[in-house]
Amino acid sequence: MRSSDSSRCPTFQEEAKLKSQGYELIAGIDEAGRGSLAGPVVAGAVILPAAADLPWLDLVRDSKKLKPRERESLFEVITREAVAVGVGVVPPQVIDSINILRATKMAMMQAVEKLGRQPHFLLIDRVTLSQCPIPQRGITKGDELCLSIACASIVAKVTRDRLMEEFDGIYPGYGFGRHKGYGTKEHLSRLEKLGPSPIHRLYFSPVRKVANQKWSSSTFECSEPFACLDDESLRLPF
Image (cartoon, rainbow, N blue to C red; front, side, top):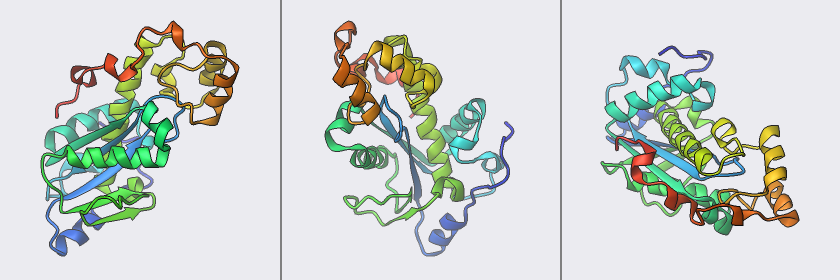
């Protein structure tokens, strides 16, 4: 593994500060897919080992600054060597019903609940979880600054990318495997031609605009898109 961007490296500074205050297990939390037009929003939660001198930590960056192969390699190391890893997935139907911010926080709560160890403190990218009793801090650009949040961003991104690649096979023609549901020119063009799929977010205006013009969900065989995937299809080791 070799990082594609060394201009700004996340550090263990926030985690070390909290450990000096007596917090032992600190979970970093981040999401992937918040701005996508299709697919779920996915959150990752990662508790790193106490030692911050592991060689692979020097390669960790915000997932958006890594190449796919770098994310995949780091994903394997993180899920193998972290103290605990949790993932939360909220489908597009729920996003449509409660809005993307609330859905993002729901996914984050799920990720925390799925950690194998109960964290003593949460470091979260941008937001806070008012419904969670665990002490926490929201950090602007946390995925660029904090190692545990950056690791969580990698877990969330790789998990979601794998899901979207699965959906590419279930709903061909949209190019989900390439753009992962984001509003690229290709995606908008295919959306206009085919109409929304069952995993598109009608809450988002580009999709709602097309849906108002035509609705083609009857062409799809799976009326409950997330029922088409089982735990094995996620290929997660936790």
